[in-house]
Length: 411
Ligand code: SF4
View 1 (cartoon, rainbow, N blue to C red):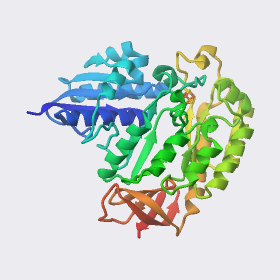
View 2: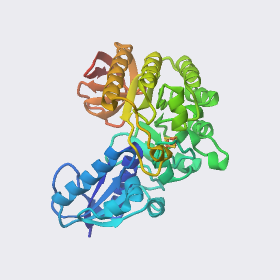
View 3: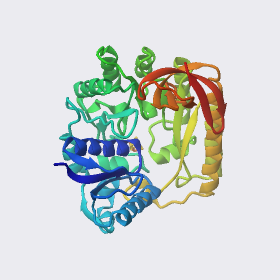
View 4: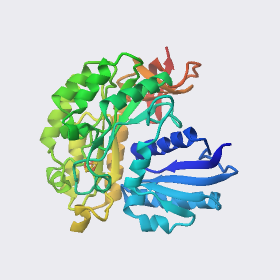
């Protein structure tokens, strides 16, 4: 007899989505029926929500999601986990329908016992056609604006053996690409005297079933020459690096507690460009941090324009209680909305410029659906319908790149 019907939903980052999928895998594995999250379904008894708290907006969307689920399923018990549940448990517990808050420590304990498929595997495979494999947790840094590292604690890395086991299972499941995720992936293994370079070398040597590997965000100071060398040594690693800059003004970087300055960042970009001429280089920028003025924004804009970025993720600073930047209670001296808009427009231009470089070129891509593929260098391509299996790799020729998107054909 199946267990009660459960709906699992998440707000926020890839790590949170990953955790939601872990929960889904666990529920399926343990005989529960899963509800889809797109429409109302009969018989939902439990909703599990993994919440994000990275910005005030993330808090609001977690609260809105919980309220929406309660309206949709008034008789269901709502259980809340994730960073939001750990940072503001009282607020989450007071929401209608919420019967349980699962704090970070407790959640870790539960997730550690999850099993997927034949082997021990807590990668997750349910809602996407790319697998995101959680390589570790936590961050040893304490950037002045960041609440997440304060909630998630120091780096805790999964062992290389466990990661290799999970990659084998995912390869058997037909995944052509696996994304390695962690809060600060560049610090993988540090607590054991290991390094991400070592992990990647072991993955590269693995012969049985070999999905290609994409890395999530890497902090600039963790991108060493050795790491770039390993990434460049094999086509198994996608030429896609997401390296958060956060500000193009040295004074603001210092206020943020970031351990690099623009000169060093620019040198790193030179190295990345010369090592991977076709790489997609993405970055994050936070606008309107306390203390920022028109001069610092102008320097950021100029710096961003000069860097070989292929896309930008631009966020407006959100004060998070519990962080040093919140405690300073300083204000930014100009218009946050306008700044964010200007940088986002710059990101659109850079993306178009980057995608146009690959017109008429063929790249290896993972098929996300019969009409959508993602190239090794992170170009999301609308393709003419293919009958090849989703999740598999195929060569895709890019035929058009416009501000709205990119189109291509499977060769
Ligand atoms: S490196 Fe990233 S996760 Fe770590 S403290 Fe800084 S912003 Fe937070």
